[in-house]
Image (spheres, rainbow, N blue to C red):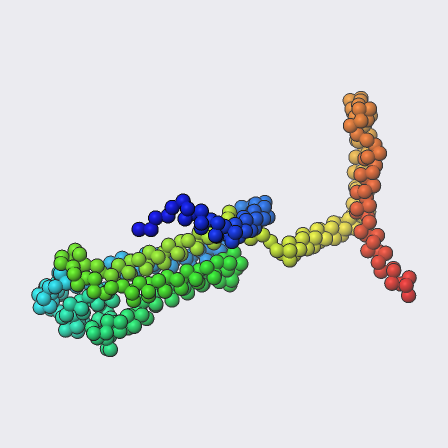
Length: 364
């Protein structure tokens, strides 16, 4: 065993520190910048289009977990008959026939019987399953890797379906940008799971069961890989479902709006305000043109003026105004200046827009 001493750690820090430290600082600064930009974004309910993405992942998770059940797995004659790998072929299939209806072997049993006679064939049976050993037309025990090539499509088929589910759940058509941001990671994970299973299956020592003495010592690799594959699919689906949920509700992995998106939002607000102002102008125009409404409006403002005049003549109000002016809490000049700036802010852009069309005419 390699022992890591203090001097070794110092050497590694001195050697790798100048390269790793700037990257760590850069990552920390970028993380702080993103956090400061997105911490003000409030948490929101999950958008409706992301429910479709989560439903796809839920169905994929459910099917993956169901595929791990023994009911959907091919039968294992060694488990079914509680036999050792060294059990003679006639004894093995006699036990199997006792478990069949009418105590008669099926046609698949008759096809499998001559192919599982040797110890190597039985090890390959536990490695690749009964379908490969029964139906492979070119496989030979002397060339065990030929079984792997025949089993490769059946190994990749579930991964292709899982990749399709991940791709659909993270597509821009279904999940839009909140889910599409995870598409590359989902595809890489799906491909990684497929490559990992192919590598483990191809590199495993298929003769490992030859030394098993008892039935309990057998490693049923084909059936175990089905379980781990389904669990891996389910975990991957749940992980990406969690990522989509936390990102879609602005709890984590929040994307700050781009300059174009912010400008588009501001334009929408301005357009809405412009529409409301136009509607208000129409209402005001109707009120002014109608004699009855105009009289009611004038009466309201006359009454309002009279009420405010009475309020301002009350003793408590007069004393309060004198006290505020005398103590310096209210500056009349400052109030007038604020009112002037406010009026210029409203009227100024309008005057500027009216002057712009006149400038070309003056130049002409």
